[in-house]
Image 1 (spheres, rainbow, N blue to C red):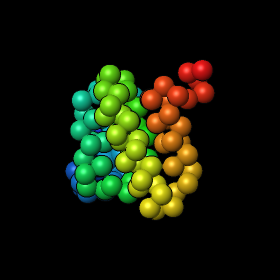
Image 2: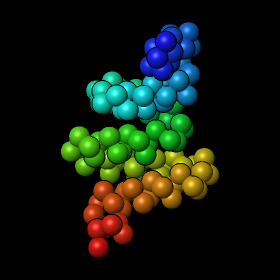
Image 3: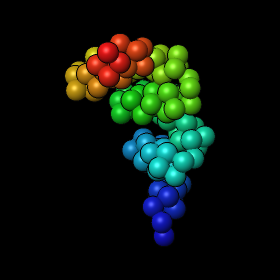
Length: 109
């Protein structure tokens, strides 16, 4: 059984598990299935807003899809959540991603 099939089976057994939803989203990204990945990431944001890793990956996916304004908004939302849950490492990563999306990161000088 391949990884995607295993994850789908686990997800069927426990559809509310945010880790499984995140793992499925990442697996779909690896397979180039952006629509499915997007659905899982957006569901996570709605149903598990403190699952902080989602914000970075969803923002990057939005950027790939030329949805820069959505990426900026999701990075900002993630920064706010990271501050609330005191995850300063995630906050720093999201801040860097936000600055790059806005064209003011180190890579853009």
